[in-house]
Amino acid sequence: MSDTDMEADENSLFSGEMPSIKKGKAALKESQEPGGIATAAKELPPPQGIGMAVAFDWGLTVQLLLMPIIATVLGQSSPVKIPGHNPTLSKALLFVIALPLACIPALLGEMIRRGRNWALRIQIVANLLLSLVGIFSLVKLYRDIRAGNFWPLVTEVILVIISPLIVWRLSRPATARWFKTATVAEARQRHGGMWVWFIALWAIVGGVLQTVAAMKGR
Image 1 (cartoon, helix red, strand yellow):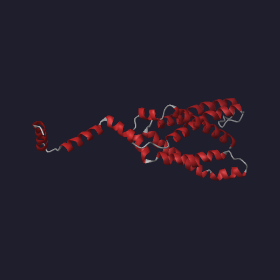
Image 2 (image 1 turned 120 degrees about the vertical axis):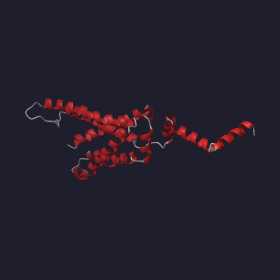
Image 3 (image 1 turned 30 degrees about the vertical axis):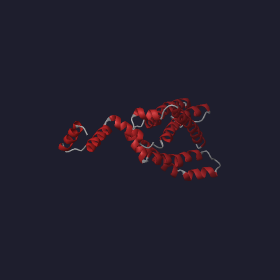
Image 4 (image 1 turned 60 degrees about the vertical axis):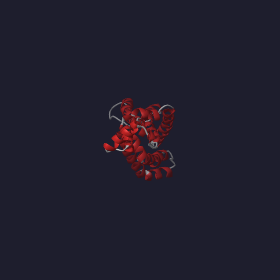
């Protein structure tokens, strides 16, 4: 051992710190740096339920946009009726109402895709409430099926099966940790590219089916 090494060890002993303790402190300091946090986020287990939640929200957006269009094309009566006014005005008002409403689930789905923690809490509560609505609607589904109308079954599958599954997967500890640690850039990188097109396709399919089911169930 050289004189320099012996002097370094003596200094370590006199300072009350062993070399191994110094290494541990250095590692702890590195883990507390922003880069260390980003690395820790990448090493976490992957989140669950994000794709299902985004497809659910965007599917609802598709439904809200399609309903006034289908009502106009098929000549159905508008759910929004103004007493004493022309039915055309009522349908135009339906478009005005549907557009801002459709922006709400679209924005929520995008915030889930970007890993916003506040959006995660809203999504869980919303799907939990919709699951309860689906459970309470099972009696009506039974009556519709007995009457020969099977289209409400689409809505019940979404509310009673898919919605609780979204709640369960988004409530997993791995998902909660990921939303707390992942940055917007990391979230967009993970849920970008072909992932967006795949989710959008499922949202369109689900939104169209739900729109037809809602029209047939009226």
